[in-house]
Length: 216
Ligand SMILES: [Zn+2]
Image (cartoon, rainbow, N blue to C red; front, side, top):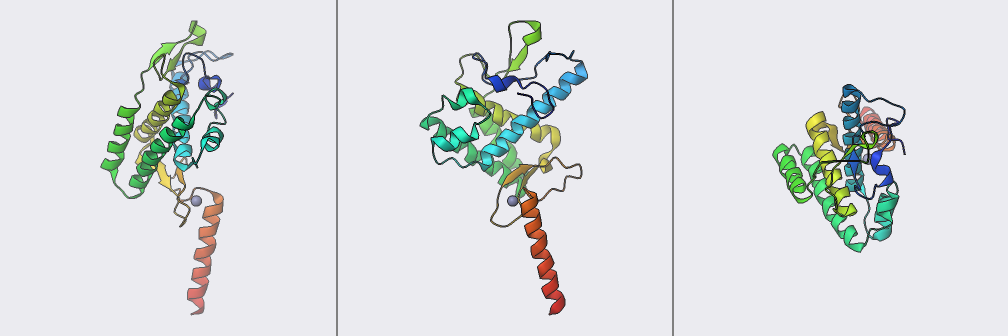
């Protein structure tokens, strides 16, 4: 499956020896340059960070919810169990707190939480592949359960995003009662809402408040 930049997404096929992989060195039909490889790594951390935000927002009441979250990971989705629901729920809780701490300006807390998660779900980068055309970085050591490798890559992706893009790229929707988290891709770094829907709602409410103030 192509990623959001149209490149092949190495982990979409869930290679048996490496459930989570990044940075395909030589995608088909493209000779990768150094610059290209760097942009690929950025694209991958963006995708993995987006996965972290999706997990933070996910409903995880049961196994069906987890399988829905893993809709783009057919191999992993087929093998997850109730134990994985509990594990993912725990990580979701920590990831939510990361975003909440960002919103509260608790920068040191953000770093501590992510470091705790990184220590719990360690990545162990390894070059794998059967030929130079297939070489890629796997974030998990061979033998790591796919569900654990998935979480390790997810946490790593958010940590990389934070360090590469900055803390103001993590957001919590400003619309009351929404509380959806998001990654801010806007060039002006001023995104406040998770969606157009929430932004419209807030603008309508502000407009009505101004009208009431004008009338009174
Ligand atoms: Zn919202």
